[in-house]
Image 1 (cartoon, rainbow, N blue to C red):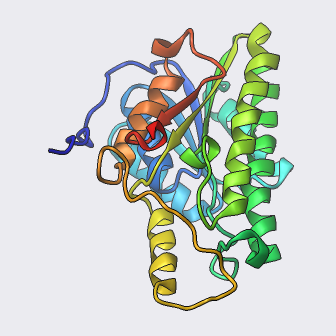
Image 2 (image 1 turned 30 degrees about the vertical axis):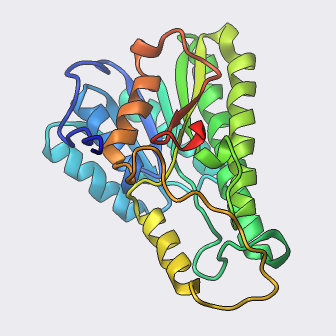
Image 3 (image 1 turned 180 degrees about the horizontal axis):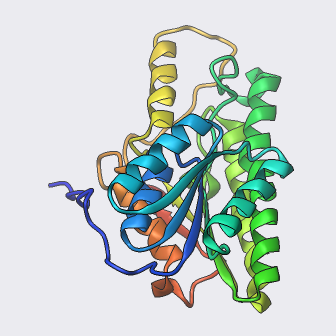
Amino acid sequence: MTVTPIPADTFCPGRFAGQVMLVTGAAGGMGLACATRAALEGAAVVLADINAEAAEAAAGGIADRGGRAIGIGADITRREDCAAMVAAAADTFGGLDIAINNAGVMDGGRDGPPAPMHLAGDLYLRRTIEINLLGTMFACAAELARMVNQGRGGVIVNVGSITGLTGSAGTPAYVASKHAVSGLTRSIAIDYAPFGVRCNSVNMAATQTPMLERATEFVMSKQGAADAAAPRAVVKSAPLIARASTVWEQAAVILFAASPEASYMTGALLASDGGWTAY
C-alpha cells in the first residue's frame, strides 16, 4: 500500500497574511506550487524566473485566483538580477519577509549532460555549480541584506536535494553543489540568528517536475549503450514510499519551514524524500 499524496488544493487560510515572499525558479514545478499555495494563504508573492514571460504568466494565473503576485525575469547567477528581484518585492509590496530559493539545474542544459567525474564536460561542471551554488549564494546575499536592513527578521528556505545529504551516481557536480547548499544553509543560520533570520533547507528525492522529466529522458537515452570507460554505479531502486513525490507534497514541507509554525527551526536540513536517506 502506498501513501496518498496531499491534494493539490490543500492550503491553510491566512497562514502568511501580511507577509511578502520571493520565490526563485517560480515559473513552474515546485517554485510555482509554493508561490500558488503561499498566495492562497495570504502572502504577497514575487515570482522570479530566468524566463520572464513564463514568470509573468504564472503570476497572472495566481492573480486570477485572487492572489497578490507579480512575475519578473531574473538570472540568479547575476548579482544585479538578485538585487533587482529583492527590490521588486520591496517596491511593490513593501519589504521582504520570506525567500524560497528554488532555482536550480541538474545539468548544463541539453549540451551539458551529467556524467561520471572523468567523463564530465566543462559545461556541465561549470553551469551546475554556477547556478546551484553561486546563484543560491547571490540570491541569499541580496535577500539577507534586505532582511538585516529592515530589522524585523525573516526566513530563507533553500531548496536542496537528497544529493545534498548523500551521494548519487553519475551526477558529481549536482551532488557537490547540493552538499554546498547544505553547508551554506547552516552557515547562514549561524551568522544571521542574531538578526532574527531563520534559514533551513528542504531536500527531496525524485519529484514530478520538468527537471525530473529531462533527467529521465537522458537516462533512458543512455540505457543499453556500451561505454567501457564509464564506471558501473550502484543505484537504489526506490524510496520507502515507492513513487515520486508531487510538487504539492514538497511545497507543503517548504512552506512549513517558511511559516511561523517552524519558529524554533533554523540550520535544519529537512529530508522530504520518501525515506530515501533512511537506508
